[in-house]
Image (cartoon, rainbow, N blue to C red; front, top):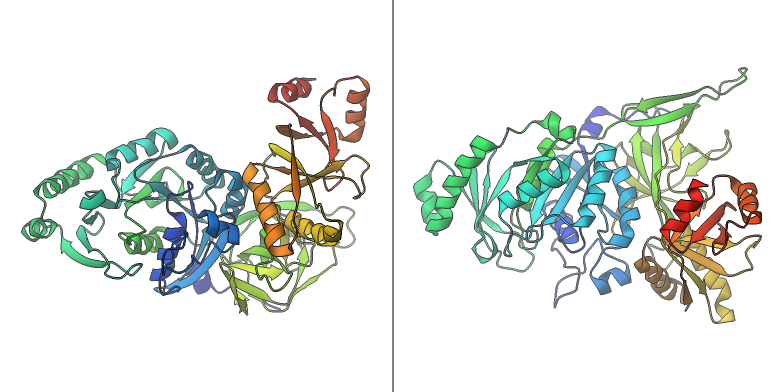
Length: 541
């Protein structure tokens, strides 16, 4: 079989992750992008309002109750001949791991800021990840329909915090009640908005060339804002260095946009600009092991796999259970790196035995919780494949005789611990089943006492408290099981590199007093500490 992907399919793919803080309007932004892509007829807000539809990307019951996104969702649609894949990630602190994994699958990142708040601590963490991954970053200052910081202030914050120069592509005219529209600095056209007549519909726009100042003044109908626009344009043209796409791709400059996703101002302009500037699916570094016959050692070589590579390759960046409440099912989300996915193809798996092949019988395109079968997928696409239970986060799937493995995706060290059990003995089977599936998703990690082969108490470890609540809520909603949690007063976990021998020796020497010794799902020793200094002092020894 011939798996090379056609160039025109690679070139029309654009893949982006939306990152931000809790509540800066990320899910609303995703919805509005989908609205322009024609994928949704009417956008829905997260907390359900009178007749507004439920948001397409927040589909877990708990997400809709709290108005936050908990797991990354993938959306895709066609727009003006391009194919977009949007990864909507949770901004909520405790779910930064999920966000981290979504960024591993993206080629571009868009950072959403609340124009009234500017940068917040969370954005910094996520920005570090983008820089690590070398993703070009686009910045969209949202919520301009509310009182906002001055655009210059926002530019300074980005410069000071990230040493990142911004180039305003869209510049705001007013804010809050007086937000009139934006100046597109690349086209030199002013876009003035009329509020949409129906809720959630598209905004009406009037376009006026910047040169036509008499008409501008009349349409803006606010002398102060008109003067300010004239002055701002002069300042920006003098002070801001020109847009340089090479610098954007190198992470030194970020194109900056202003608008309001809720009232739909500036979203379509952002989308049009992103398609011109964003990068198409890129290559990934991988380690390939030749499975040659006759030579003693399997030669390992590390090389960049281009999207045009002749074989299919992809990696799992997320797994999820029960997208469909009617069936118990498990999906692995795969980002295609090279080649073509075809229904029914056979692939090798980076952690399985050399000759073993898996049949990818059916893949699904994901749209929040709705899915449709996919016959074929190209580099840059994200597909969901049924997970027989052996595909884990970070695994590579490939065709051809050379084993390929992309580097794994890092996970964070947990800081919260608790025991969990089902109070009703009759629920035991469903409880085990539910916990197994949730653990496969990597929502939380499981720990057990040493030498416990599964009969003893189950301990959970997570980055934040909210993850425990999600586990309890999903056990109740999806498996109909009540559970009891008892918090443990440890605040830090460290995996012992020296294995059990080193742990036993330290224990015999009396160095592990007040430290809990447990094992993870793979039987590796984990030490739980009550505070940071204890861990630091032990690490020194």
